[in-house]
Length: 100
Image (cartoon, rainbow, N blue to C red; front, side, top):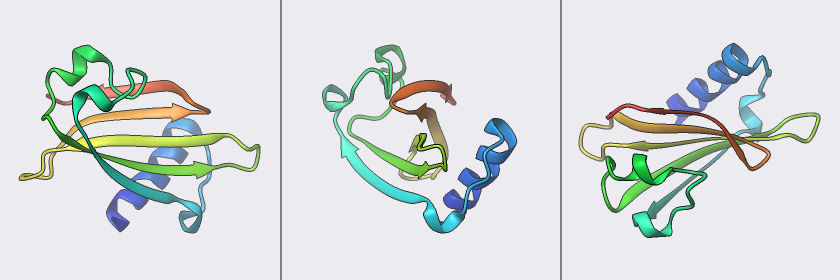
Protein backbone atom coordinates (compact mmCIF):
# COMPACT_ATOMS: atom_id res chain seq x y z
CA UNK A 1 0.00 0.00 0.00
CA UNK A 2 2.87 2.40 0.75
CA UNK A 3 4.00 2.01 -2.85
CA UNK A 4 0.58 3.21 -4.02
CA UNK A 5 0.63 6.17 -1.65
CA UNK A 6 4.06 7.25 -2.89
CA UNK A 7 2.82 6.95 -6.49
CA UNK A 8 -0.24 9.07 -5.60
CA UNK A 9 1.87 11.81 -3.95
CA UNK A 10 4.31 11.93 -6.91
CA UNK A 11 1.52 11.97 -9.51
CA UNK A 12 -0.44 14.71 -7.71
CA UNK A 13 2.68 16.91 -7.75
CA UNK A 14 3.77 16.08 -11.30
CA UNK A 15 0.39 16.17 -13.07
CA UNK A 16 -1.78 18.48 -10.95
CA UNK A 17 0.89 20.56 -9.17
CA UNK A 18 -0.62 19.75 -5.77
CA UNK A 19 1.72 19.06 -2.86
CA UNK A 20 0.33 16.19 -0.78
CA UNK A 21 1.27 15.20 2.76
CA UNK A 22 1.44 11.39 2.60
CA UNK A 23 0.07 11.15 6.16
CA UNK A 24 -3.20 12.71 4.94
CA UNK A 25 -3.81 10.20 2.12
CA UNK A 26 -6.66 7.76 2.64
CA UNK A 27 -6.84 4.27 1.13
CA UNK A 28 -9.86 2.03 0.57
CA UNK A 29 -10.54 -1.05 -1.53
CA UNK A 30 -13.88 -2.58 -2.51
CA UNK A 31 -14.90 -5.51 -4.63
CA UNK A 32 -17.62 -4.67 -7.16
CA UNK A 33 -19.58 -6.46 -9.80
CA UNK A 34 -19.85 -4.41 -12.97
CA UNK A 35 -23.52 -3.54 -12.44
CA UNK A 36 -22.66 -2.02 -9.04
CA UNK A 37 -20.24 0.59 -10.40
CA UNK A 38 -21.24 4.10 -11.43
CA UNK A 39 -20.42 5.06 -15.02
CA UNK A 40 -18.48 8.13 -13.86
CA UNK A 41 -16.01 5.79 -12.14
CA UNK A 42 -15.67 3.34 -15.01
CA UNK A 43 -17.56 3.97 -18.28
CA UNK A 44 -19.45 0.99 -19.73
CA UNK A 45 -17.06 0.62 -22.68
CA UNK A 46 -14.14 0.25 -20.26
CA UNK A 47 -15.94 -2.15 -17.92
CA UNK A 48 -16.27 -4.67 -20.75
CA UNK A 49 -12.47 -5.06 -20.74
CA UNK A 50 -12.12 -5.51 -16.96
CA UNK A 51 -12.64 -8.57 -14.73
CA UNK A 52 -16.03 -9.17 -13.14
CA UNK A 53 -16.00 -8.87 -10.16
CA UNK A 54 -13.11 -6.43 -9.77
CA UNK A 55 -11.23 -4.92 -6.87
CA UNK A 56 -11.49 -1.12 -7.05
CA UNK A 57 -8.78 0.57 -4.96
CA UNK A 58 -8.86 4.27 -4.14
CA UNK A 59 -6.45 6.83 -2.74
CA UNK A 60 -7.97 10.10 -1.57
CA UNK A 61 -6.81 13.49 -0.36
CA UNK A 62 -8.48 16.79 0.53
CA UNK A 63 -6.29 19.81 -0.20
CA UNK A 64 -6.15 23.13 1.66
CA UNK A 65 -8.81 24.59 -0.68
CA UNK A 66 -11.16 21.71 0.32
CA UNK A 67 -10.88 20.04 -3.10
CA UNK A 68 -11.33 16.29 -2.84
CA UNK A 69 -8.96 14.28 -5.05
CA UNK A 70 -9.43 10.56 -5.67
CA UNK A 71 -7.32 8.19 -7.73
CA UNK A 72 -9.09 4.90 -8.39
CA UNK A 73 -7.56 1.88 -10.03
CA UNK A 74 -8.19 -1.74 -10.92
CA UNK A 75 -5.38 -4.29 -10.99
CA UNK A 76 -5.08 -7.84 -12.19
CA UNK A 77 -5.36 -9.88 -8.99
CA UNK A 78 -2.73 -12.41 -10.07
CA UNK A 79 -0.10 -10.25 -11.75
CA UNK A 80 -0.86 -7.02 -9.81
CA UNK A 81 -0.59 -5.21 -13.16
CA UNK A 82 -2.68 -2.04 -13.34
CA UNK A 83 -5.61 -2.45 -15.76
CA UNK A 84 -7.46 0.84 -15.30
CA UNK A 85 -6.94 4.21 -13.59
CA UNK A 86 -9.34 7.11 -13.01
CA UNK A 87 -8.77 10.52 -11.39
CA UNK A 88 -11.69 12.32 -9.77
CA UNK A 89 -11.75 15.86 -8.43
CA UNK A 90 -14.75 17.00 -6.38
CA UNK A 91 -16.89 14.14 -7.68
CA UNK A 92 -16.09 14.63 -11.37
CA UNK A 93 -13.88 12.38 -13.48
CA UNK A 94 -11.00 14.50 -14.80
CA UNK A 95 -8.70 11.86 -16.32
CA UNK A 96 -8.50 8.14 -16.95
CA UNK A 97 -6.24 5.57 -18.52
CA UNK A 98 -7.13 2.05 -19.60
CA UNK A 99 -4.22 -0.35 -19.89
CA UNK A 100 -6.00 -3.38 -21.44
